[in-house]
Amino acid sequence: MKIDVLIIDDESRARDGLKNQLEVLGNPVNILAEGGSVAEGYELIKKHKPDLVFLDIEMTDGNGFDLLRQIGEIDFIVVFVTAFDQYAIQAIKFSALDYLLKPLDPDELDEVLKKAYESFDQKENAKKVQNLLVNSELENPNDRKLAIKCVDSIKYLRIDDISHFVADGSYTKICMKDGKSILASKMLKYFEQTLSDFSQFLRIHRSSMVNLKYVEEYQYSSGGSVLMVTGQNLYPSEDRKKKLLNKLNQLN
Image: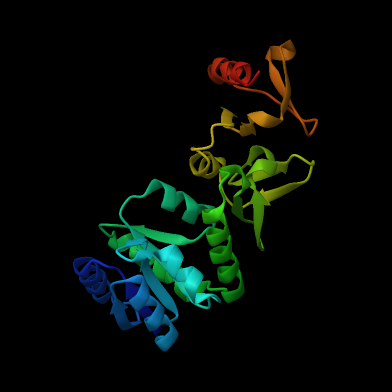
């Protein structure tokens, strides 16, 4: 069974390069058409009803997010293709969507296609895209929702509601300010990297990261610990105490 694909990118060389790589990989992909603008992309998607769209982010008449807003109901897989754009990549990561950086890496392209073959969930895909579009319109970054992959579902958590993270083997326990928690199917390092632009999040130990906003107090006894708004105590490592205390002092 072949996947029907559209390529939407305003650089003809980028489109040709992607087509060549798809041919070299030998995946069962049927390239329906290609377009070089938001307007062309809209018409092609409506006409061909693809399974997967490789979508450039920045184009001459708008961006890929604009195109998705115009389409409305998203019933296809979206894989963003972009030159390095920190803001756009962060937004895509927040919604657990796939992206490829230019110049394309064949192994990463192959991995994206494998995921498309094996695990496409139309309903969940639409939720991810909707989360991306809502996040991109919010003025306050802390109001954005982070898509969290759990064992059997994806949950969407508002950044400002997260109290702290605790490593649990290859998983991470995410604790909310209201005391609830979920177990995410990602290691703590993933969340540290994803939230690196949010200064209120600080890794205080190899096994924990806190939202400084929800630190109730720093306790000097027993070698030092932070009491979180949830009532839990977390213990910083020796090499991170100084930075933690400096950060907390800046908040006061």
